[in-house]
Image 1 (cartoon, rainbow, N blue to C red):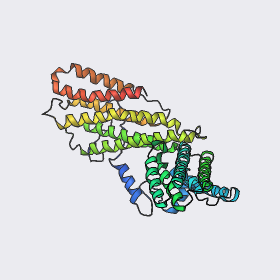
Image 2 (image 1 turned 30 degrees about the vertical axis):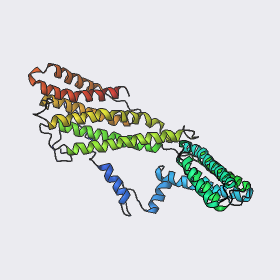
Image 3 (image 1 turned 180 degrees about the vertical axis):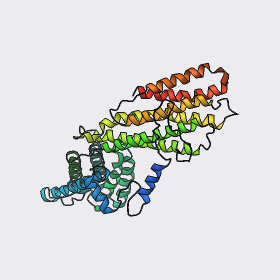
Image 4 (image 1 turned 60 degrees about the vertical axis):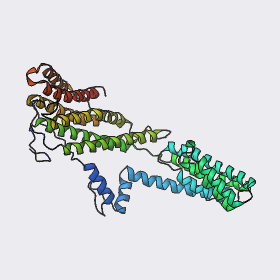
Length: 403
């Protein structure tokens, strides 16, 4: 049986049972991303129809990113329409464009961001209104007042409490001065009321109507990271087992791809946690809470896996001119078996609630450590090389035991 480089794979491990190779080609995720970004018409590498009709059909049929975009778009439309109708028909405001504008921008990615954005938006607009009122009363020349308001407003907008809404301090003041309404306190009050009204409607719609959750991102990230880690460990197992490691560029590329999956997983965890904050649906299965612990375990494994990759590269590249010599064949065979078993354990972690059997891993680890202590005839450099590989393998076993 051969792997993706045409190398011969072992049909069984040293403990009986068939090996279960995890095939994850280096760069698969990059190629998927490029295909999604630059693909034309038809289906992408995952078999998804990327035409507008296919996108809409998937949004209706399958929970996920497409449906969430569709729902958030509908909610923003509802919020803007409701704000406009309330401002014009009920409050009869003369220039109610700020109400639907604020409503749209407050239908945020998470409920927490909507509430935070409401405070920031109202605060920045109120500051801009106040700045325009002061400048309009104290500075007779409109051009000078405009310059002062823009300069001071943009500086004040950089206060971190305003967040992304800080730019509206200067913009709101500029609009009021340029419209010539800065001296009319009633119109200034209308601008503030419109903004507060629209923002409040946007927050209410986002909070009460299908508040967004991102649990499917955790499920996807868990599956992809488990495959990437297990695939990297399988490649390490195959490489260590051979007497001549050969070209290590593919191993490095696969390691970089796995690191990208780790970063994506950390981003998914952050967004999902934020999505559950203040969310009325946070107790639902779609919140992704049951995937958070497995994903946290998988991300915690990455430093030890990276150390193991570095140890294998170091000993394989510097064979006769480095104190960390490539270990002897018997020791490498046991280490390869251990790494292969760890790959299977990593995959089991991704299945929430599935127990991970580490008994064989611990037995092989003890055998390797005993061999390390007693193998005087194999030479100190070879023992040092083996030790650099055993240490991260031990860390992996400990992380899996304490998950």
